[in-house]
Length: 304
Length: 320
Image (cartoon, rainbow over all chains, first blue to last red; front, side, top):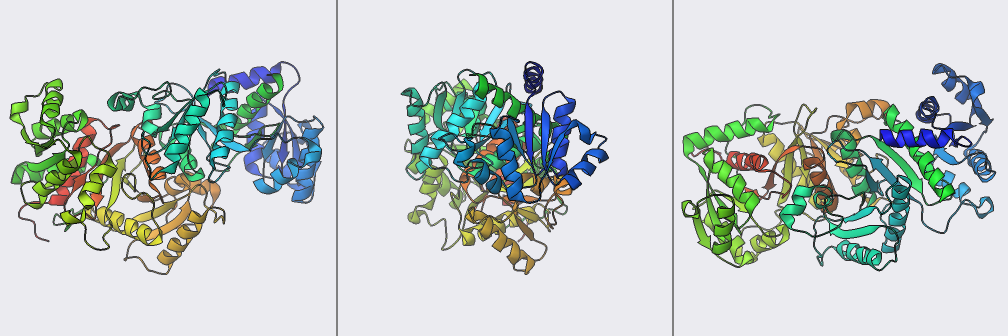
């Protein structure tokens, strides 16, 4: 995860600095994220929201409000509109969600006139660094799509793969998770997993290797692979794990944060700019890491 | 099954279960355990360790030649082991269960067959193991670094998807096991992705309804249930403080309940692999203790499941 931060710092220091448009910045969690990111030299910020609250939040933390562009707004709709305008006008590269509902924000941003939409689905990818895993692990989707259909899983994989590429993994290994490693009639998602795997074989989903159905231990734990005798390019060394539902993805990611000493960075991908969400409950490092991840993804989208 | 053994204080570490089981085995002799489809290297190495420590006396039911090969690979002498030859998986599971019902064994353990095949064999009506509306469920007790208590999780292995009624039974089974281990006033968290009630997530409505039942006193005295709760809010007081939510369970959960096996399974596997948790797994609701281990466990970990099963059988002199 430190490499991710370093990479974001490197990107930010060459060329024009990356700028974050903060939607409804009158929220301590996003202010902490922004101050953390700025202190690390990762990104600058445009703070959009209730200026009367934003300024004291900055001052309380010893920051100078003059270092930031603050755009005062009164309603959520106005906030969302200003954010969309700021990003569409090229004045920011990343969106960070503050005290505004995700759906309200996205509805506005994705309006055709702003041209921020791509044709695919928006989905969430969490990048984690479990202590016992030799590399970063991307878990998707624990934050956005509640119960993806087959088509949506394809999009979720494409989005997470993009994050993998941005992190410097040329061909991410994707495991589609299920309780068992076999195709079982009662579990329709095992069919879907098999089909997704085959789609990658056939080149329908590019520049990644997909395997599934695969249980989580088979995906990340070499001892389980040996025991099971499974032959797979993904097993035991997955870069991306795809969960069946938002609960599965969310609880898995949180278990790694709570018990595997993993740092966590999250991002919504699928639009022309990455969108970050941070939670009040996130430690300061994770909030900053989420901004760093968005910088790395944004840079990748722009330069690929 | 009846819980005859009495634990007089809340168990906080799996080693306490192991020590109590050790005492029982010293007083009563090793407990006899029937391994269904015995040609499983991991189960065999766990059982070998359990036998070495005087906890269990295994009976292996399965493909005789494969069992021999597996034992030899582990440098164990096949002639030291009691083996019932039965090549068919379904029949081996049933034969192993019959060893327990006929009094020749105390505990049943799943070997090298899929959990679903194993339970299908046991739920065969001819076996008469499950009565009427009984719900058997899987409960796992975890010990994790930095936690001052055991965390119970249900269901990771057996109940594929629970409706409201079944969820209540899952809670009942898990609280009974917790109470058996001395945790008389367990706090139960119903897990979800977020703590808010979200119409797009029907599970959150169900969980809210169950939480309200708890508020209304519809659970046995001492049991407190709340949900929906995200995992961090369920177990981390720090997360609760930062989020500022009010809940009798948040930050203090003993039992985590998930609504389907997909979530339970991925959480279980995350905990035992990347999170380095120790675990003891059992089935609650069945007429005798059943062990379903996971291949991500190591033989030492299997000792905890064996120990829990021994406690559940109890001592010969214990009365219900």
